[in-house]
Image (cartoon, rainbow, N blue to C red; front, side, top):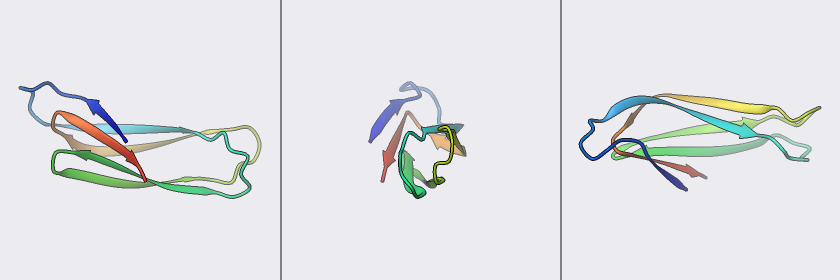
Length: 79
């Protein structure tokens, strides 16, 4: 997991868009699926990321998690 300080001690909670970038460098013959958990205070969001079966040059995958309420720190955990 990873914890990112976003706001200062006296800053109010705010809504953010969290953009996750994935570089697919696998030599796998099948698609890969993973879950990413985002948490800040009592707010938790979970997204499923699917990296398709590789074909041709590696391509990045980007996922936007919108309206994430962040209060101070944001924790990112790959499940």
